[in-house]
Amino acid sequence: MAFDGTNMSCIAVGAMRMHMFKTTADAKAAVDSAGYFNSYAKFCTAGDLFLVEATDDTGWMYVSANSGTVVDVNDLVTARGSDTD
Image (tube, rainbow, N blue to C red; front, side, top):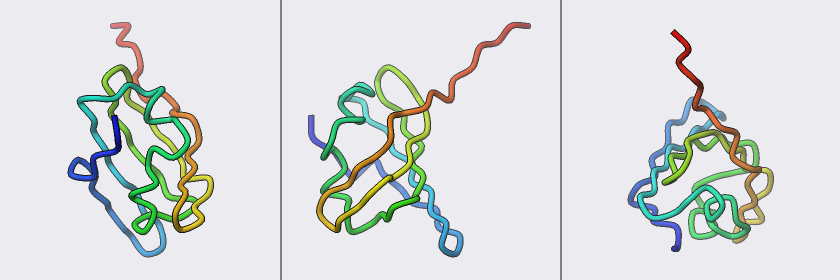
């Protein structure tokens, strides 16, 4: 599926920005794909942090590059842990 920006929000503190995104249609493999966030290019810059909840995982992604039209993000780093108690 394509990126749906209605489920994206941004928290900005000075130059630091964190974006939160939830998809009910796409797994992390799709969200990690090149070009997934291209339509969001004007709202993010390299170094921004994305907190992503995909259908099969939740985690962090960094914007590694943004040309103004093409957004490249690093692979999702899982934020879920295990509850051993």
